[in-house]
Image 1 (tube, one colour):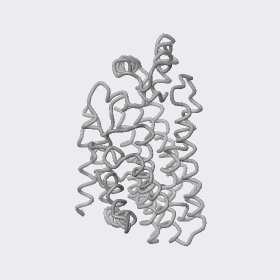
Image 2 (tube, one colour):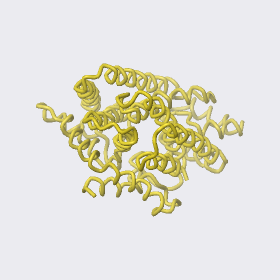
Image 3 (spheres, one colour):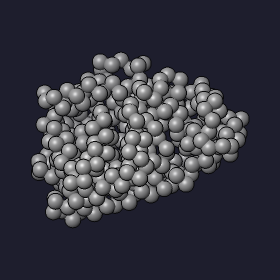
Image 4 (cartoon, one colour):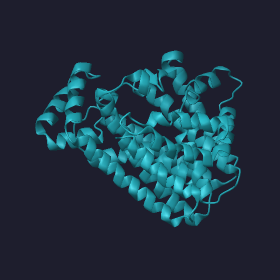
Length: 351
């Protein structure tokens, strides 16, 4: 196994709260990484190349985030899906690297919008280099991504990436517009997830639409459902972290979504079941922003003490099951088995 594969496997624990037996869950990621370790190493080199620039500060800012210990979840999915679809073109490496580059761009921008101070256990790029530099390097990443995909020579791949980035931007705008709105709107929440998170995951799992057209649809459905499961699990963790661990361990301040006024699924479910809690949330969101820590902590504890997080986990599990069902259109292979295991792994992050 390559050094990169070992490094990625070693980060598996980052997905998992301490209540999950580390051996079995981390082994799921270890097996998946080992299966496509060579592709991941090539994608890592390509990512480093794409971040290079004659303007020396650009790779410094981009690398501050891109090489800060991320788990390379999206490149892993691309490599596994390409293998499962028996797509061997070198373009698969380009798409794997671009998926991570697009993710890096969104995180650089997100941290400016959310005034984030920590990411992956260290100060965010905006805290070290300033908001302007973080935004502009995020723009550079988006431009380089388009440039890289154009080298595939496939107009469909270019169009699919453009459509994906457009949807991601729409999701970000919709989420920002909804901040501070106490409305219990599951439809809007789902729309934000579909565009902000699932769209990029689905693009990565479809390998930009380059494999056999008969398999692109199932791969896209797999990614879309997995993206929903992944984001819901992450939203659950935002509440669970509030009673367990701090920003140095997660790379994100516990309860940050609530303090920023975001109505995520666990909070929506808890408020639907408890009108009194909904009234408290409404009053808090109408107060000063960001929400005071003491106020946020009391609300976080109320959600954790309810059954809202377990209900949200079950919804994530339903999406994970649908993701697995989409894979039935692919021929049996070790890669397909690994993709099925990834769905289990993603949901276990919520336990």
